Amino acid sequence: MEKKIKRLLIANRGVPAVRVMHTCIDRKILTTAVYSTPDRLAHHVTMADSAVHIGEAPPGDSYLNMDKIIAAAIKSKADAIHPGWGFLAENHEFARKVINAGLIWVGPQPEVIRMMGDKIEAKEIVRQAGLPTIPGISNVTKAKEIIRWMKEEDVQYPIMIKASAGGGGKGMVKVERDEDLSQALARVRSEAKKSFGDDKVLVEKYIERGRHIEVQVVADYYGNVVHLYERECTIQRRNQKIIEEAPSPSLSPDLREEICRKAVDLMRAIGYTSAGTVEFLFDSATRKYYFLEVNTRLQVEHGITELITGLDIVGIMIDVAMGKKLPFRQEDIHPNRWAMEARLNAEDPRTFNPSFGQLTRLTEPHGPAVRISSGVYEGADIPPYYDSLLMLIMSAGADREDAIRVMDRCLSRSLRVEGVKTLAPLLLSIVRHPAFIRGDFSTRFIEENLDDLISTFIETDDEDEALKVARYVAKVSALGPQNWM
Image (cartoon, rainbow, N blue to C red; front, top):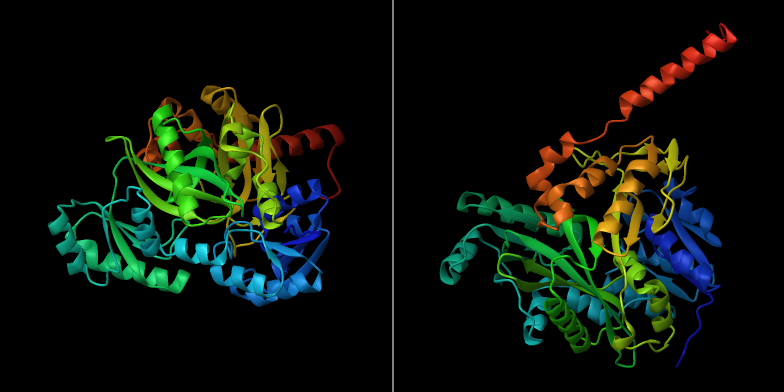
């Protein structure tokens, strides 16, 4: 039975909130924004049809406060809640509370979120579904358990210790030798408890030349499960993605078909609905792939899949939540372009430390084959409390070379950000690097090439200062001494 969504509350801020609002505008669905005190003039607040203040700056007092968000939905007469990505997007308790409050949850079922959110439980389900998994050990509490497992299974260093409930690159430590095991294990358990409220960890063999491949899947309540092909998300810093592309340059047509089919089989086996991704680690040396995790939410990089397929994934999520069937079948999906995404974060491109302050100047890239998903405007404040993502810059082309060329134009000629530091110099260095252009990279690409990448940064600070001086000299020359001198 179909339900109607006339007003949607977006339980998020910045880029994800604005992205969901664009689809709502297309669908003539009214939107409600929620905001913390420092976000009172944020872009997502001014764009929404209505907005509700939900607390102070710390996320626990605002964007992670389930009861306040649900109260805001009821107060604004919203029919449904979309969580975007981050914050409460993969929180099964929040999904359950939304449904119990009589609201429509735009996302997968709470039980599926819970099941896939526990990496240990998810890995066992995946094994039963016939997908290959990385050699590992679960529920580890002592370093000697890891050493025993490595000896019994003949696993060599390096290994990765992970929080069972983790995600987004948090709660993960790579270990290279016995001496570091105890400290690394204690650190991951502590981080896991603090970030996710659960100190369970697992340990896996670390794949040295790994590449991240994820398959986008959409499913309805009538048993229809369709993949929208894959994305390559290998270029990362601190285990967090910064450049993604679709399709993947790593896969042969046969391997692409196999990985996508396995992803659909898994999502069908767990009764998945809405949009989600199945993430794999691909070992380019052996040409083998291993299941990593299921992301039970809208992914940051969904836009490049939209560019190559012509579909609106947020729109599909809303339709499924209203009880509609998918309007297409697998044989209807024909990607016909190459797309690339760069995440423009407010960070120092040398150290990745967050940069915050006021955006004193902002010029976004435009032109053919460009899509910008922004969460800011010129003059906006970038607060220190939240994710540092300013905008997603997407390019498209007939092939990979075309997409890289357009991305180069975006980053080198069209983009201007002042007031905060951004990753723009690093992103430009990556897309111009010969190894990236060849498609020869792994998850360690930035780590291995950082000095080389930094050496090619085009500095703008000195030029900016010179321009200021030149303007000052020109003004004095033309107009004579000023009364403020």
